[in-house]
Image 1 (tube, rainbow, N blue to C red):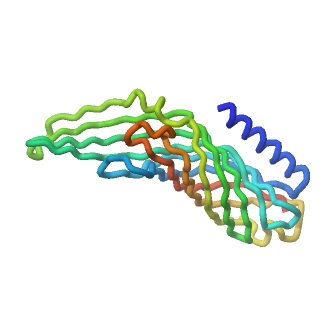
Image 2 (image 1 turned 180 degrees about the vertical axis):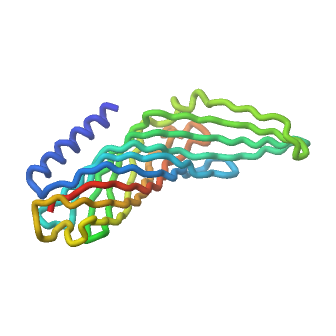
Image 3 (image 1 turned 90 degrees about the vertical axis):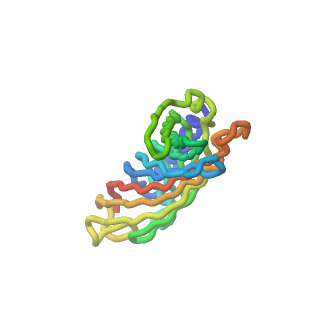
Length: 237
């Protein structure tokens, strides 16, 4: 966790430098929905998405006066994980095992961003710290298509096995809506705040395995998360 604090402090200093030496930054808060999965060999018959929430406080700093290139960074909360299903069949008995992996992260990205009039693209690395992890399972037993029983429980060791850190690549694009359409970034009539809405699409591809040691079967997995987010903010133009 200390390394994440140091990285956050470095980004804060970098942000302060650009604020003092470059054009007016855009500050905002974004809320959205995640569709996440864990890629790799799981040993399950089905691997399904987990839907979760995403919240992100960000700053977007142009690299020079009237520049279309900017640096975006911030701090976010991301609900990730996956759902897995496996069916085991024995003589006269079928057991369906459903596993829900829930991983919640604090995420810190740094994007190089290219802005057009109503559209932008971005790419950059991210670092994430795991703040909570939970694995819940459910077994449903049937015999000749007749329900027998079901049991539920938690994998108590799951949180201790999962890596606390994740590093990866994030890339995406978005659309900008100016509520005052005559005005926008890099246009005339400066020194006035113009309200805007951002619709953001991004994909995070993790590089770190849930079990970096590689000693735990079924944990050779990596995070993959697609996010749709909406934010309302303003730009000074």
